[in-house]
Length: 175
Image (cartoon, rainbow, N blue to C red; front, side, top):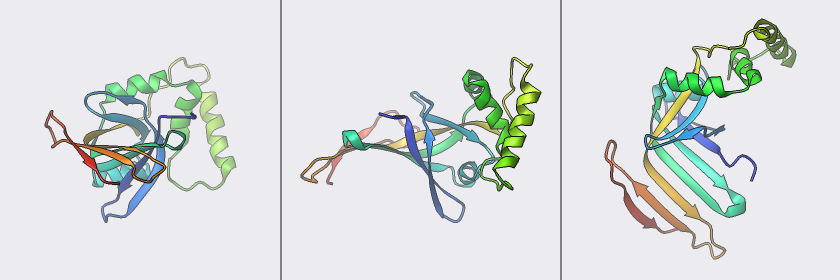
């Protein structure tokens, strides 16, 4: 399976207008699920004004889906630094190159900026994380597991947790 950590991140802006895009899950633990991005991107703008999101994993070949809903928070600078420092140098330079979600004159302008930054960082062993780049964590309060069935009587198991609670309530949902 190609990139099983690919997930659809759904957000809504301050007016409730939805937006969705694919991002990559990079960490998960008892606190939640983490992805990294440019804090000046449209997704980060949405999350800043409406700090709620939904993640959807879809594995069609397996007839499986997982949906995760909850509030979001930025991860610590230390967590963002640790992940940024684990990335290949080209990806680190890419974080400096792209003004994500902003218009660019043409592809050449983007590539020229990358070339300039590659030259700047060529002799440096460490590329510092841009201040506008880091992680977001969803704090799950709802998780639904879906399994497809040929009969269309799919299995749906939903787990709900009140914000801050430790225990989850499980319910089977009708398809």
